[in-house]
Amino acid sequence: MRPALCLALLATLALPAAERKAPMSLHDISLNTLDGKPQSLGAYQGKVVLVVNVASECGYTPQYAGLQKLYSAQKDRGLVVLGFPCNQFGGQEPGTSTQIASFCQKTYGVTFPLFEKLDVKGAKQAPLYQFLTAKHGEPAWNFHKYLVGKDGQVLQAFSSKVAPDSAELKAAIEAALK
Image (cartoon, rainbow, N blue to C red):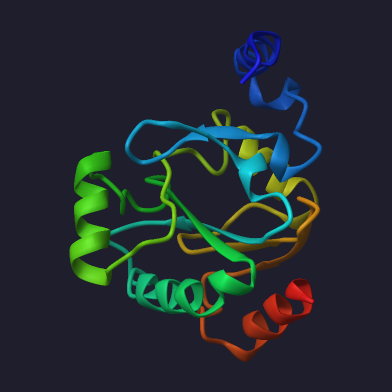
């Protein structure tokens, strides 16, 4: 990341959530992966992205298996699933990054990218979720999904109740991949 861009991002993060300017595209955002390495979401330009706020101790946690299956089946066609752990809903993601990574790998064989824990709502809402929620509303619970097109713009949002193997989600992904 260029130093000027990094300084601008840091200045933006110092502002209260209500005063921050949301990014113009998913591709404008950089975050740390679960292992602490910086990752520009610009790396996913030209791909369809399914962004999911995840948690290890939630009734919807078994969706990890469906998300992994979806990712494995569609990654060669240009779909990437990105998981963002969040502890804002019932304290259902209390673990450290190491614990989260271990749980996801051992329990569900997750190979899709996972990122550091973040806030998806409220005063400390991460810039990623400022962008995602600007037109599509905040998540009501864990495993809320945002489908982002190849151009980095949000196409649609899906509640936690919409399973990764649902006809509704599959049809939306299929349309986005064309």
